[in-house]
Length: 488
Picture 1: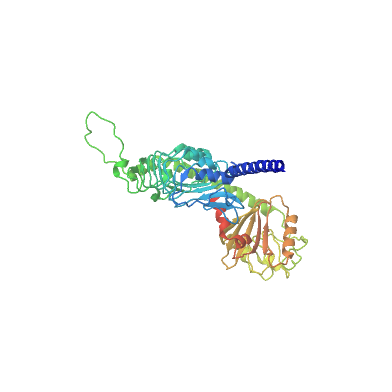
Picture 2: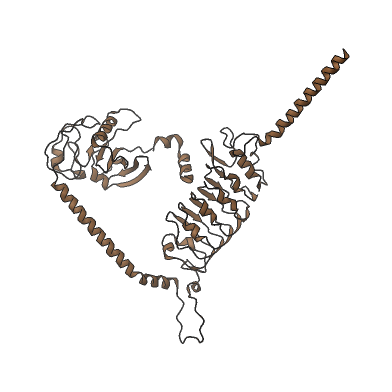
């Protein structure tokens, strides 16, 4: 009996040791639960590279929650879209140390990094060039030093916004790298110690450019000065042509001579420099003017020839059958009617929009179609193509098939106009069939068209304007739209 008890005790002790060993293996594996390629692992590696004295990022942990974009409890400072990480916003957290941008190199969905108002110092990390997917980078109000690395522009081909203002950067600007940035829209380099000249070539896409309050020298290029506000170059006393610059900045460097000249000219000011440049380019300006006159004259001759061809063409077909309520006549009745200019209106309409008395006299109870515009419904009032051409337009948005505009006409009517630019292969019959279907729909959430304009190269669909915006705006508000514009 004693032997049996000893054998059982030995086996139980062995089993207990195996269980304890397995528990140690599991506990040891927990810190590496996130694979290196995941977003969590990348952020944990990034957190280990800098200092967080206030423990603002204490929730960045491999334990809870399991993912940075967890819907119930997302990590602080992350920006997510549909469960994926698209941005980091670590603003005013007193972070310092070395920011390891290379930890984020394998996150192709990361489009924005915002590190404003922290305590990062030293040169801009060379690992920044590895984050090739960035659209926006905000490093303002830190203590970065040294020159601006050209790799930021050479490797980050998708970069649109770069904020490096209020640092301690020095050295010349990487002119060639900046000029080669294909999508750069905003570049803020003010309040630093940047030296050298302002680049003559800047990206055509650049809209905001600020190098004020630096140590720039030389002459401000005329092509750059005319593109941006003069405040973008203020605070550079040695930059000729900048607001508040020293008069000595525009003085030419004189070559050493054996004896002083009998009389010396006063130093050139910024106004004198630009005046000389204008005089030397007057011949070029005259040549450009003559070329523009020649092109305009040729265009006018071509337009006159096209008008003569259209006037000599056979008269267009009209729809004699009245249009059903809100719809389009099922088949056109072709008649020989004199050609009229402008837009055909419904019966009882005025000559507004260029429609002639002959066009309105042919009307029945419904709408009429002439070769310019078809008014399908008078629910918003009577108007024509000429009214819309003279209206003030406002872009509402762009879609896959075209653009939408808000047209406010002088007669007080405001409509929404959809300009279809990708339907040139659609024939008139197919186009009108689709509009007929839309006109016959009766639903509180579907707008029936008010009219349309058809040409082979131009198609307009006019509908009632909804002042409260689209369904996307009502469902999601401005947040989604703002994200798309900032990072895409």
